[in-house]
Picture 1 (cartoon, rainbow, N blue to C red):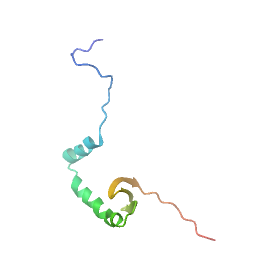
Picture 2 (cartoon, helix red, strand yellow):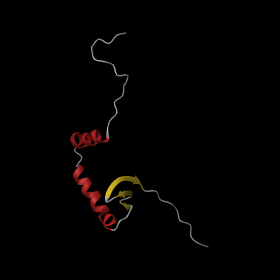
Picture 3 (tube, rainbow, N blue to C red):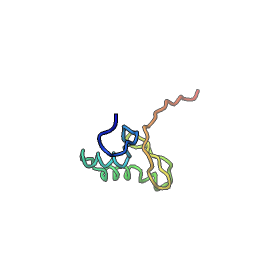
Picture 4 (cartoon, rainbow, N blue to C red):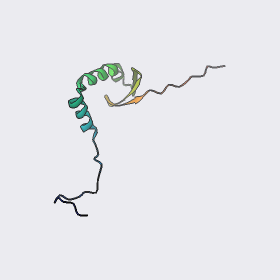
Length: 85
């Protein structure tokens, strides 16, 4: 069956949603205060950046730092430590 409009068909049925679009949607539609969250992360990582750490664990998550920039946030993995002896 031929489409009724003259627009070309791309073959894609599901749109890819960029991180930027998702962030703006959360900000504008749901009132997420992105700058307040950025400041919270900046505060949590301040000493780590100052002293050249590659990561900081704060508030139950691990912030990864590269070249003075917090590049991602990972779920903190807790491992049991076995005692000596």
